[in-house]
Length: 213
Ligand code: CTP
Image (cartoon, rainbow, N blue to C red; front, side, top):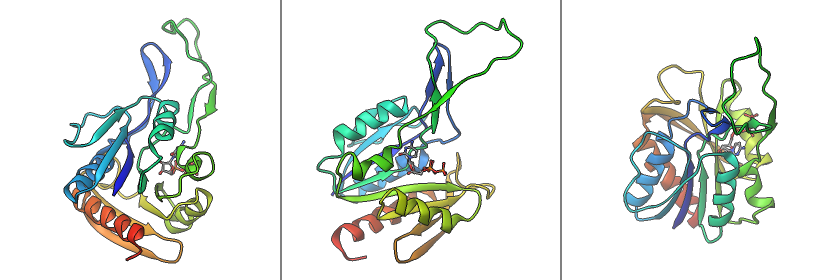
């Protein structure tokens, strides 16, 4: 299969030295890319900045902002058998970018934020993508209900849901526990390394593509 993976956090600039981002390490997305190549698939990895090594034998497309990630996805999603959106895209960006460093002259500073495009949500309607579509959901409550809502709203075949309120797994950890949420069923993948979970997720995506799941 040809598989596109988005990974990492996006970085939304405020001025030449500052930006907004989040705690995503990119580990899950990079593990998916590595598992994909190990299992014989062709991987295109579109990634925000991370401290991770670029996995070998993949097409790697580095991006910074959500807007750049959207453009990269739009340009590369055609011809993919599956697209897995594990990136932690910043939901908002500063409404304007200062070309000079903002000086600390005032006692308070208000940043106006505007909504970023929903990249996963654009796949079906805007990009007319008809391959297997997989999203991630990071939730602190009502894991399955919220994931299932995302599955429908973003027209996905599968949502990989993780409860980020659980200590020691998920964000920035080497381990995670995820719930695979399909339209008709769920499957729990108990706590495991992100490498092993990534293998199982790629196999699950392959089953969806070949109709053997
Ligand atoms: N996602 C995306 N583009 C965005 C926001 C999210 O592609 N601008 C993708 C993520 O990569 C993930 C999925 O959408 O696969 C879920 O992201 P999340 O932020 O949890 O979903 P939201 O729709 O933003 O819902 P909420 O803010 O209610 O959690």
